[in-house]
Length: 329
Image 1 (spheres, rainbow, N blue to C red):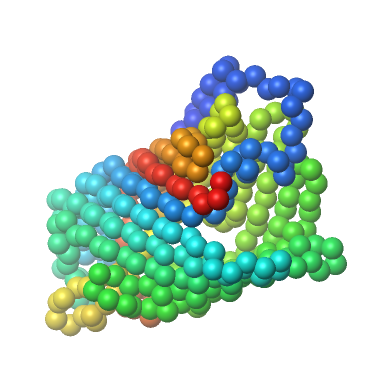
Image 2 (cartoon, rainbow, N blue to C red):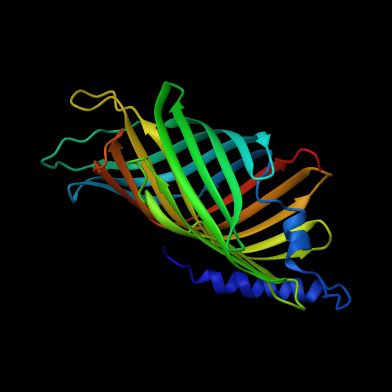
């Protein structure tokens, strides 16, 4: 991941604005469990819709370390929607279902192709993709030697507007190893059966720490994100940090000599500045801006492990606007 030098600037700017406008009330002694950062802005939300747009950046593609294409990605737009529905809830057991949709539009220009000794497929100047996901998640909660443990088993089906493509299973576990009024720390691991994932197995860490006498909270789920957060007034939350943004879509070359379906998977590191605002009892507005740096992008044949094509892309900017809604609040 590339860390932008602008990160220090945004941090100092956020610290200056927040400390200048909002003073900490010394009489209001909160602990992590009842901090409005968690109470008013839950991690899981019933309905989420967001629109994201990236600025222009140059890119190149290689096969077997031979460059065959480069150009400019003028714009990249994403529309995402998800619904999370609890199906069953017991004292130690919960079943959830999640439906997700992503529309992605790309705009290429100045595309150049170079002769290499391997065949490669070309693409349209303004490709669009539709990605659908349906998943069912089973969660088990218990205590072992006084430590809370959460085990999750997940079954996912995905596809595109052209039809169903894959079934993927995953298992994860998380153990709460340390907890005080101001700090929680959990460690675990995640394993996926998907061959398309760049990292199919990796350790996970959940960390939250509230700085006593200040409005700031460290909130992290590693390797997914790491944020410093604080409340802005009673109904606003400011977040500054970084996250790993992963995404994929199905590619259908429609050219002789190639398989029918390929997957494109991309992982990017983002330096992110976000603001969330409670508009109504259950409705939250979110705004994000930042810098994105692509770690790796790969095309693979569906259900195959080997990289077919590698894509690299220069750092670019982005903004996101979204809404979320929760039931029963």
